[in-house]
Image 1 (cartoon, one colour):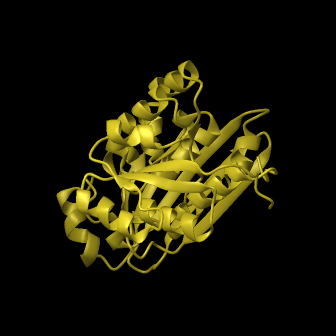
Image 2: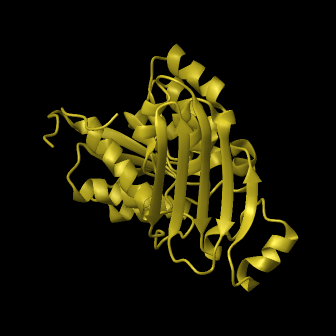
Length: 278
């Protein structure tokens, strides 16, 4: 798709882990109009290593106040906990922000939406490691969605260090030879217990327009090698089931490779004259 011409847009990245680093490197490889100009990470050495790998040699920043004047867009790829102060600061500086931690947006939706309106600045939420969102957004336009659920299934390594694991679940995580539920409940509880694993659930909830309707299930399965997400929607429009089986990121098994590619697709859309999909 033909890209819109124009000067480079400076991109500041907060969070230089698997997502932030790969997005930066691939944008540069593709000769995107987005050029990484500043990087920030709670582990300064991670930001420094990324800066050295990029031809643009972005400034390694120590805090947000230093990063924001050096960019036109902000990519938040840090964590659910860090996403709120990053998004707040970006919006107040009138810098559009791409939030990879959609769980952080859902937990603070009212506050961040109000800031976006006040400062006339956009928040972008990529679809992440998920398909079927266009259909879900269309389904909610007329009539009622009567049933909405998402089941996220990952290998045990994908849940290592999750704050919501009980002691029994920690013991079972690598000992169990069969799949078992780690969580059944609403999306808010899922975000609190598995913040690094259920951004897809938050994105589904937001796309539905009615987060309270969503039922979330989180499953550990030692028999699989992919991160799998299944959405099921039933309503006046009919019925929709979408299954995505993602290869985990080599750098971070909690993250699906498709989540990184979804961020790249978003930046490509921002560059293009033609938009495909809802």
